[in-house]
Image (cartoon, rainbow, N blue to C red; front, side, top):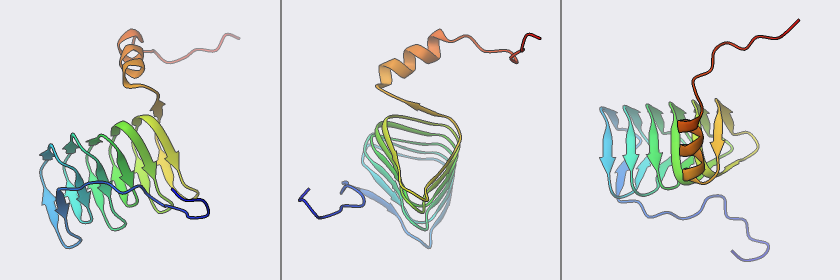
Length: 137
């Protein structure tokens, strides 16, 4: 990146594109990356990057190496690498990522778990389910 130039989102290699006029009911899975500009009622899973474009809306979980959300996700997001929620992006669900950035105006309505994936896995396995917390009087 050159000084003085701002790059909003990193360039990602995408093999699979769901166009703005497309509506899909069902899960999408591929080894290559996805760009979603349409509507998906189902989960999206990729070994590569996943980009939810400005008009994109996923009602389901999203999993990818790097995930960029500029549209909307109603579901959990798991990024084995970086998660980027843009200024018009909205995630309603829990997110897990190695690193994360939320631009001013971006929305995350859920819980975030950040750090190396092995740390998250160990914490999830070691933590027993919690009961409702009680406050001593």
